[in-house]
Image: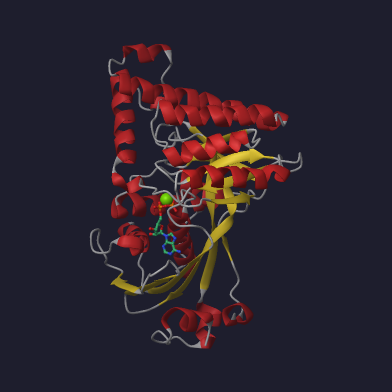
Length: 394
Ligand code: ADP
Ligand code: MG
């Protein structure tokens, strides 16, 4: 019997036979992402610059013909969850809501699904701000697209996965994460223009590694509460500011026009959106010139703006960034939605250990959980992995 039955349920799911696994399993590998720069811009019509990273989620899917969906996951304590292809919002919660939401999103878009057994295995910390959610939903949608021959392109998969997260799970996310994990490429970032629909993507070659630098993630382990209201509140504030200024997207505002905003909070949110938009353009120029010190300065300025104007940072993220800079990073910032999650730092590889020591010491002094510090590389986006008998036997 293949790894599916032995490692997940301990017994064969209905109809599962080794031979069927070899031929019928659709297996997709989908990376996580870090956003290099352009934070909280993807719902404001601004440019964003994420990169897919070399840590991924694997989704294995095998079709059923009885309308049943079984989901197994390697998340700690996750027991098998079962529902049907007619699942509706509110009927599945907790971790499996992302899988259920993806099924619902596909069916709601008119795709006839027949039921499926899904196995989700991850090398990406969940809830760390590295987009395990988009990796999971895009992996499920991509595997089902292949299994049912639905003919969806990557942008359509991204939109369906986004709908799962926003309308089923209840986290009103933008489209950056899904596009990043689907369109990423080794050694390159994905520049996304969110002012047009569908959003357009363009690969931006990076190159700091050739110049002796590395990108480090500091996963703070602090709660990443995207769905808990703060994120929705920022979106609502940005929409209100854009409406007051009479523009479709807040990123289209000018700094001069913001004097018309009477609310100081809306002014600060708008200031972040506009300065961050300028920083993305500055970062792309710095990358093209290989001006890494300049890029570092821009990253650190982005953090200050997110902390002071957009108010989405957290003590854990601020301390991570401060410690990284003290340890000699060229620049550092929180990445992702904020309120915990992860920070990134651009640093020479020989300084990574000092950075780790410094961050750990600062966390220990505050009696915070030890953060995870690791280097990442820009990696390929979602791709199918051939399921050979050798692989299933592992
Ligand atoms: P992030 O995307 O930053 O990791 P989120 O809170 O947006 O954080 O998404 C985390 C959710 O993604 C989990 O609660 C779960 O629903 C889903 N997920 C992540 N990893 C897995 C996994 N290995 N198996 C099943 N679901 C997963
Ligand atoms: Mg997420």
